Image (tube, helix red, strand yellow):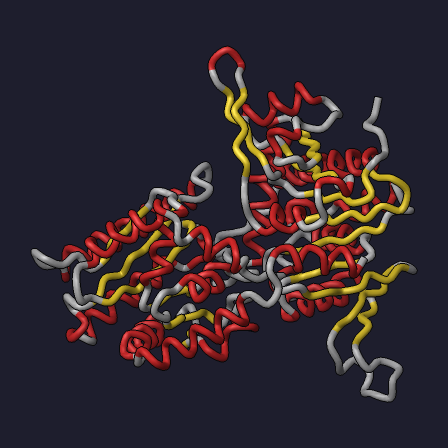
Length: 492
C-alpha cells in the first residue's frame, strides 16, 4: 500500500538530511547533515507538512529505510523533518550513482574528460543508464505517492535529471521545479553524450515547470543545449517587445507544447551560522594549532577542498611551487595550508588524483623546506572546525576550480575572515559572477598567472584587503540558504 498523499511541499535529492550507522545487534545511530538544503527546508518550518525524499546511501541507511517501509523516518532522527528514504537495490544505486551521475554527467558538466581515450559509451554504459532510469523512476514513484493535489516539488541536481518528466507523467497536477547545483556544459561538449541520452536528460528536466541554476551562464548553456539537441524554442528577454529577437537573456524553453521557465538563484553563505560556529571553542583550539604550524610572522595561503578532480588542487600546488621558485623573497615567509579532503575514493581516478596531490606537496616540501619551515601543510582528514579556523586566519584564499557550479568556500572565507583575506578566484567558478570584481581572477589552467596572482595577493596592503573582504562578504551573503530555498518555492 502506498504512502498517503499528505505533502504540499516536497524536496527530492540523492543525499538526505540524515545518515545512519549500523552497529552490533542491528542498532542504528543517526547523524544529521548540514548544507544549504537542510538550512533551506528549515525556513518553512516542520509544521508545513513538507516531505524530503532521498536515497539510502549505505547499509545503515538501507536498514533504516527497510524498517520505515513507505513510512517516514523517525522525526527524532531528522530534526523534526518528514523524510522518506528509498531502499534502492545496491547494484542499481551503484550503477546510477557511480556509473552515470558521478562518472558521466559530472564529467560532462565539468568538462573533465580526456577525450582521446574517454568517454567510451558501450554495453556496460547502456546497463548503467538503465539503472539510472530505474533509480529516477523510484524517486518519481515516491514523490507521486506523497504529494497532495497541486503540491510543489523541488527536485535537486544531476542525480535526478529524469525525475521531472517521469513525475509529470504520473502526476500532471503537480508544480515541479528542478535545480542544478553543477555547471551546465556548452552544446558542443554536452553532445559527447549518446544522442538519445543527451535528449533524455534535457527532456527530463523540461518535464518541470521551472529549471533553475546557480548562475545565468549555466542557465544559458542549458537553453543552448535544448536548442541544439532538441530543436527547442528559446524565449528571451525582449522577444516580441520591439527588442531584437533572440538578443536577450534566455527566460524559458518551449518544447512539445510545454514551456519550462528558467531561473537563477545564486546560493549564498549562511553568515549567521558561520560567524557563530567559527567562534566556538573547538575552532579556537584548531586556530592555535594552525598558527603554531604556520609559525610567527608568516603569511598563509589557504585552500579548502575535497580531492574532487574539478577543484584543480594539483595546478594550485604547481602555482605555489612556481611562486617559491620565481619569488624567493617568499621562502620561509609563507605557508600554503591545503585542506584536501578525500572524495569518491571508491573510484580509481579519484584515488589516483588524491595520491598525486599528496606526492606534489611532499616534493615541494623536500625541495624548499628548511629546518624551521614546511612550505605546504597538507591536511587530508575532514575537519569542519579546522576549516573554519583556516578561514579565520587566511591572508590569501586560493579557489581555482577548473569549473564549479558555485563554490561556497569562496563565499565563506570572507564572512569568517578576521583581518581580511585576498581571494584568488578562478573565472570558471560560478562564484565569479558575484565576487569577480573584488577578487584576483585567474584562468585555472594558467599556472604562471596563478603564481603571479598569489604574489599580488600576498603583497596586498592590509587596508585594501579589509575593504575587499567587506564587499566580498556582502556579495557572498546576498542569498543565504533559507532565502535561496524560499525564492525557488515562490517562483513555482
